Image 1: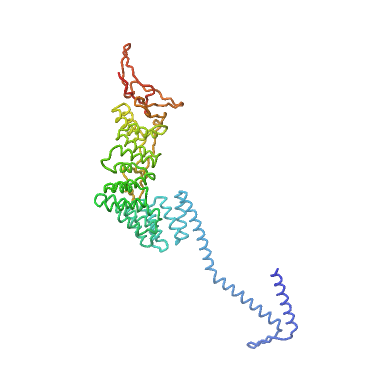
Image 2: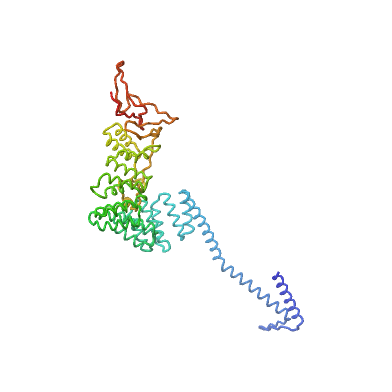
Length: 503
């Protein structure tokens, strides 16, 4: 509304101005090179206005002609830029979806339209990597290292590519060069892994301390504990005091680190501080029950009676009552003390029910039967079960298993990757359980019982192939007769012989 009013106001002013000029008589006279021009003021002003407009029009035409080539060139550049970024988008999507052919085509188009674009180089490297063209990958990342804005990206790409090809020396060299330009978390981790792969625990600890600001506190404390434990294990025999200091510092940083706890307790026990060693294990047991801790805990005082060892083992049950390691420790101590009922009661919750007992549990039950009743059929039955029982927990890092803890995976230098857990069980079709084993829970004269599932009854074994059967000859016939206790089949289909069976 205000604009409309302003427009009308301007028109009114112009109209009054023109009327004023008309009312004012006067002439304009121009003499130039013998020519004399005489006209009124109003016509003169009109001629001046037309001359100015013509000059402006001519100048605009000249300017357009002069700027035409840059304008056309700029339009072409804009069109190429749009095509290049469109190719980048297609290439990134192709790399993400795994279409190597389309990614390579898009990378070539992006490189053609955007020769100086860093993203075009990155797309070229990623597409070549997807296609397995290692030469192009190295060429693209090397080209990035020559540009100031992409130098770190190029070194990281070369580092990752060298790692994938198994060239760890080249990977560490690229990481060092990148770390010299700017300290970044990935380069700090790479330098740490270089020391770890060489088992240079002191160098790895120094590298971790030098880059403390690049790694979060939780991870840094855990890795420090692992490295101090590795150093302490190396110094256990030569420098026990220093090893004890490092082990206790590691326990303080990572209370659930079993090797550090076991080492600290073992060294304290050797120095006569059994009470302090016991407190360290008792604090760590609820966090990470482990057979190594149980062994150290029961052996804190050499020459101790079996009854005292059993009493100490029962402390572990109070700390972690549901964990099998607590009850296994009690069972072993009870067998040594001759308290077979306590050993059987301790193992009973973990060997009955639907879950199959592990190999170590079966061996403990075999040891219990042999200690209580000698070499009986039940001992052999438990030993047979141990052969095919699920495996016990061990130190596992991916597909690598170790019977002892290692600070890092030797092949890669990855720190703190071993975890205490049970391996995955893969059963064949013919090994799937069709029955639930009810283990021995009463007197020794009571044989193991196999409870058949209603939907899959198990056929009794043939007399001539049943293991451990004793044939007897009847007075009425010469055919052998097999004596088997009712329900005496074991988990694997073989009959278990009662100790009372005789020919």
